[in-house]
Picture 1: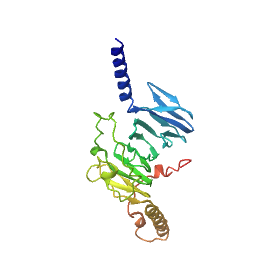
Picture 2 (picture 1 turned 90 degrees about the vertical axis):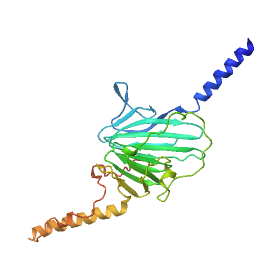
Picture 3 (picture 1 turned 60 degrees about the horizontal axis):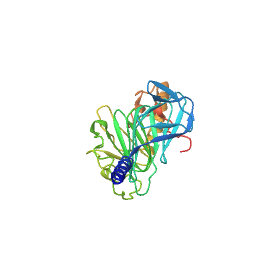
Picture 4 (picture 1 turned 180 degrees about the vertical axis):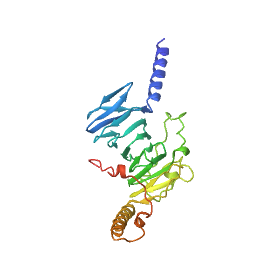
Length: 273
């Protein structure tokens, strides 16, 4: 009888250890400004510093509001008038898995690379998917993505294939320490499931996805600012020309088109980044 009980105990312990090899976790609230809430059940509950946001919960920010979350060292900053769902927060001894869904507004993520761990970190909108390996980036619900350091793979949401879930709880071998990616890192090294045609967007670059699902080539942010300044000067010159009776009104307003994000032109300069 003692031998049977001992075997049953060991079996139960083995099951507990196996189930605990991959677990859903929560992100901790480290900064709050203004009205910030989380959806729980049928209610919206106010968040404060020290609270936790669990996997599958949605965070919403009001006007002139902001929240920052920390998950195992990686930071998610959600600016005003945004709604972001923490679809997946999972950790094992060999892998970190984070999946965010941006319903409205934007989210900026500063992903911490952990030595010996594979990082699967993605942020999705209704039009695009950004997949990363240790980087600082932002995605907007309008289809724009910006990279501040490292690199992301960016592609049309219609090409997105959710990760397989059948064996996700099985323990894996320690991952090779690849470190953060950059603009010349092949797409499939950043995301093994990156579809054909996916764009690698590096530090200081942005990319956008239009209504037809076309992902733009990475656009240098410094050049974009220069184009905006040039267009602004051209527009001012046009107005002066009209006042002087010069023909060709509006000629300075048709310069090269850059990704448009005037409604979010805060560059996501979140406090502490």
